[in-house]
Image (tube, rainbow, N blue to C red; front, top):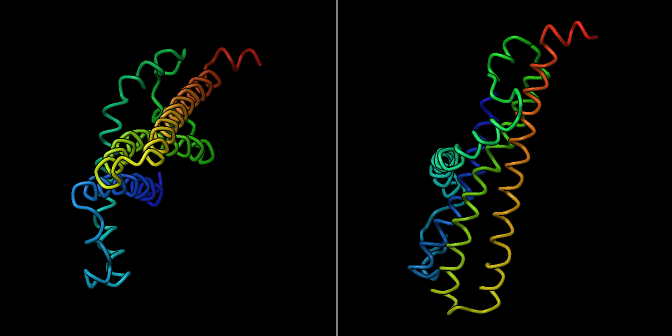
Length: 186
């Protein structure tokens, strides 16, 4: 996998994590204190400081999401005949850049949706906390958070499941294509 892809994955996950962390901070402290002018930081410096935090946040949330969803991933993988086989071994055996890129793209999407699921859970909790603490429990904002939060959680989890099933189904299919039986049947 290309380093740029991994960096982008972690930046996406880290930005999402930064959003819910900021919501929790703003829930406790309010938002009046936060203005770039008050901090005397120009936008370039603010961006550099943000990236310095966002990338490690992405790594952290990716590891947490991996740990939390690993059991479900194992069940999905076990439910697919041939899905338990080694992807690394297959890719080395095939030595095909297009297939490797295809699997890498699927795995990238799996990681992004997996991290997004955990981030959306935290964003929903943070948004509800913010509405309760800073917006005096405004019913409209509370309803929006209660509708869109679970919807985003469901969609990201559902996407993660579909992508995971697709990945291991394709893995099993490629192994089946390599087996001596299938080459004799052709």
